[in-house]
Each structure stands twice: as C-alpha cells, then as structure tokens.
Length: 328
Image (cartoon, rainbow, N blue to C red; front, side, top):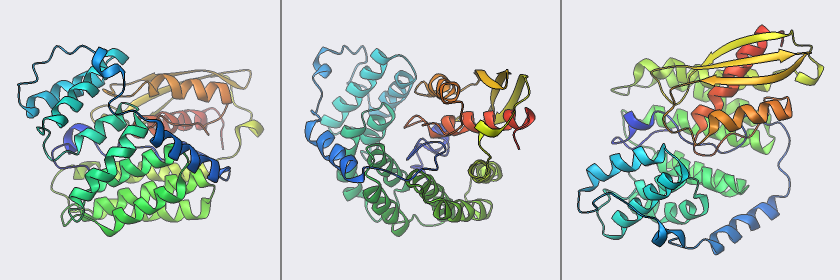
C-alpha cells in the first residue's frame, strides 16, 4: 500500500491484513458478519472508559512532531504502554494538534481498536478525498474485513483505486491495492480473482518510478509471488515431512533484516516454530502466528490485523522451511 509520505520510511510497505494469511474456503455468514460490524460500531465508546484511568508521563504541551515519536515507541511495548499511546493520540486530536489527522485512525488501527478506527477513518477520508490517501483506504478496508464485512471492504478498495495519488506514487499504490484485493478475495474463497489481482501486483511493482525505496520493489513482488505459490501448495495433511529442523527466510516488517523461521518436524508433524526477527511493532504476531501454525498443523492461519508484513513473512518463512522438509 502507499503510505503517507511522512510515514513511508517508518512504517514500511504495509501494516494491514484484510483476511487470513492463507485461506481457501468461502466466506460464511456474511449477513451475520455485517451485523457484527454494525454492532461493534454501535457499542464502541469514544473515548473508552479506560482513558481517564490511564496515566501519561508525556508533556502534552510539546508539539505533535515530537509526540508522534513517543507514541510510536509506546506502540511497540506492553498493553499499558499501548493504552498510553492511544490516550496521547486522542489528547492531541482533541486539541487539534495532530498534523493532517491521519495518525488518529492509523494508531487506533495499529493498537487493535478496530471498531473505533472504523468510526474515525470515514471522517478522515472524507477530508482528504481526492489526494490519493491509499494507506487510509486500505486501513479502513482492513477494519471492515476484520469484522467480515467483505462487500463493504471491496467498495473501499475500489474507492482507493479511483482516488490514486499522482506520480511518482501512482504505480506502487496500484500494486498495493491489487495485492490487498488478492488478500480479500482469498478470504472470500474466490481464488481465481485472488490470482488475477496478485499477478497484476507482481507485474506493477517493478515498474514503479517512486523516488525512494525502489531497491525493495523486487522483494515486494516476490512477497506477492509467495502468496501465489502458497495458493497452489499441496495439503500438509497428505504430505510426509522429514524429521529435523529447517530454516526459511522471508521479508518482514523491517527491511533491514529478514525474518528467520525455524520449523522443527518430529514424526512428520510440526512441533516447534521459532522466529528470529528485528520487528519493532509486531502486535505479538511473532508469537501468535507460530502458535496457530502448530495448533492447526497448517499454513492456513489468521494473521494479526495491523501486522500483515510480519504475519505473512512468518508464513512465507515457514513455507520455505517446509519445502526443505519435503513439501512439494
């Protein structure tokens, strides 16, 4: 996805997830899930009750350009620190000192407050429509898909495609949108559509004329190619894996250091998945995704919303490791 220029270096390519890391079953209960979104939006309290009881040590008289760095630091820490980050963001939003406002819903999304973020994103996007805020559209689509509101998420992705930024960020934005279309169609069980959009993203990434980050474009395309490969992967249930420990590598949230995923096979089953990483804000993906892989004995696992690159990197690393263990 295209990030706001002020955040592109800090956040990397993507912090979204609009579906499982890999899924191949049709969506069920769409009506119930849409009702779930409506219920979540109705029940969310803004601000939440814990805001008043959450202490902050930051001097809120300092300007937003400094406060946002503290918020990002807090988001990478424990739950109490994340609540401080959310409270600080809210306080700065209330006094109108928060830049163009995109960071309020973005930090709500990254901290797991999906219903609250889903309330804030439409208001923000209405203010910046016509300026190509691709990152905002994709975050909003992710919030909707988190509740299973897939048709609504598709509508938002189409709005993103209709509201692309100007050059030099237009091509990479299109690629990111196609990538996320693919993710959503996988979640919906429409694998031909998913392949179509993934293939277009792979084609577009190397053609981007963006002024910085071009050295990563081939890796972004390779990341999407990995998704295509996993769609064609044979079932682990019918594959006899060789015992041992195997290590795969994949691009993670940090573009400075690949994720290293070590998978231990015993009696043909995955018994341990360890991730070596330098991810800064992984929202516990490096723990939760390996746990799911072992519990389900599958790479068809739910990623952590808000930590797509990390989640997908773990699955891709595990996939590379399993190929060494005999996965066709």
